[in-house]
Each structure stands twice: as C-alpha cells, then as structure tokens.
Length: 202
Image (tube, rainbow, N blue to C red; front, top):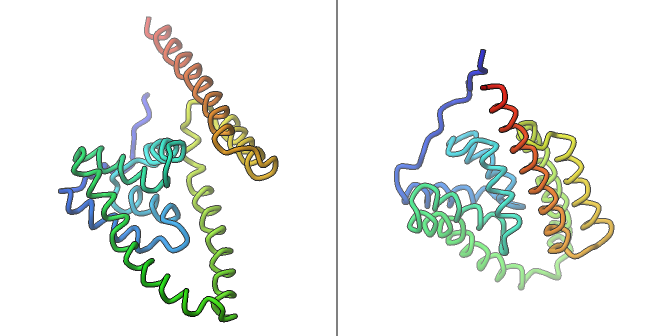
C-alpha cells in the first residue's frame, strides 16, 4: 500500500502585497539572522513551502552570489508571482530593516566606545552563532528524504565545515567541488531509483 502524505496542504500568498508584508515581518524577527526564523515562518506558519522545498531553495541561494536570504526571497517571490513577486519579497526583506540599521548605525557611532555597548555586541555574537546552529539542526530531518541518504548528506556537510572552518580553504572552491560531487551522486541515486521503479513496473 502506498504511503499517504499526511502533511497539511500547502498555501500560497494571495498577492504580492502579502509577500511584501510577510517578508517584512520575517525580516523584523531576524535578530542575528533571518535564516533562523525563515523556516519556521515560511514552512510551519504560512505553509508556503514544504521543508524539503525550503531546503532545496536555501541550498541554491547559498551557492549563488549575494546574501542567501535575499536569494531565497527572490526565488520564493518569483515562484508565486514572477518578477513582480520577486521584487515584492526582496523589498519586504530589505526596506524596513535598512531604515532600522541606518538609525542603529548612527547610535552606534556615538556610543561605540562605551563598555556596555562592546559587551552587548559580544553577547549578541554568541546568540547569533546559537541561532545558526539551531536552524541547521532543525533542517536536518528534511535530509532523511534526500535521495542521497542521510549519511552522505552528513558527510558532505562535515566536509564543507572542515574545508571552510578548519582548513581555511576558499569558500568558492569548496562549494564548487562539493556541490559537483553532491550533484553527481544525487543524479546517480535518482536515476537508479527511476530505473528500479521502471523495472518493477514491467
């Protein structure tokens, strides 16, 4: 018997304006990084994407030049409303936070030498690191459905960490090599699975 998908039905934004508002609210929650809350908002709350789809788009956004969350906003906006949606999502991600950053920059320039400000920045750096680690762990279950299998996914993630954080190799070369390996192996797995299904159907 085929396994039934019991996950809630996906929704879609009603308009580009809703996209703009959603990404504005998402950006305003992103203290320490929007990525930490993007998965919760887009997948769990609004149900615009499946977790696997979010992970795929995030992977593409990570490889492309530019901030990954901006790339993610562009791809999600384009997915629903084309170029108009892409601009709406990106504007929502950037407009209000830009005004806040400009205001905080003016305050920081004035108070940057104060010991309390320096201590607060160190504390926020630690919290940001925790948010990134928490986001990565929350996305791990989506890898269970990856055609490469969880062990290979974990091995590629570990190799990326070692290459960038420990060996200090250039990010571009690490991504190019490991993404090529991942793409080739995933293609092989998908092709083998398709051939297996075709063989079982005959």
